[in-house]
Length: 294
Image (cartoon, rainbow, N blue to C red):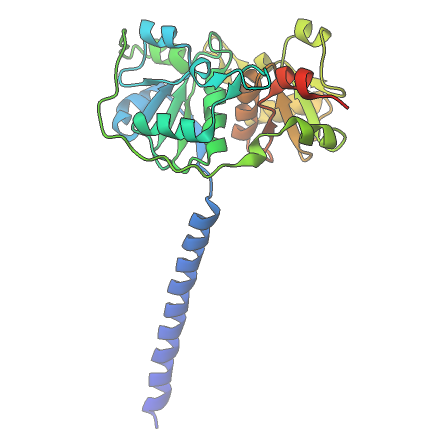
């Protein structure tokens, strides 16, 4: 009889161990099922140079800028090449997810590929932020990093650049889209939610004078970066900037510009600050003007 409690104890431990294994399995399964999004952060130039083999690098500047001088091995991915005027005449509309998936796969990127995005927060109108937003919207599961300071920081570190066209030579991968519609917002939904969300207009003063979304708070996208290398402002600075304009970051924030590019940059900096997730009105003022009718 003395051995019975011992056997029961072992069985109990085994049962608890089995339960832990099963619980862990269920958690992992659920994580995969709900498609937990990519980890978003920044990376400095020297770290990227040292660990270049780990990442696929996307250049968010206009293709001509990429050809003039780019990080070796980087692939051109400018909004200018992946937006179009849609059937309703709205400019700068992002291509269909299936088309984007085909393009990313052809560039050797799957939904789990670790990606670094860079630009110059200037000639691309903050296109690097748009690329980050796009990947998150598509449901990218691999890590995403913004090169802090962009191409300027890379040059300042005296790291090599390559000019001319450079083609990706490697296997074509399959990119599985797990669309995250909550990161975008349609014109119809925005009209319904105008009094429930904070809308931020990231365009210039001159543009706003020509028309804006009712009730929008004006914060230029240029306020979201600083310094000669145009680095995203710190999380503390983002919170201070929003508070300065009377914005409660606990309430959902929707950023917009003309066509989702500059607002995509502001959205990215908002996300980097660790605030509750915001939305990018990708249709922007172009869509609002054409589709906002009573």
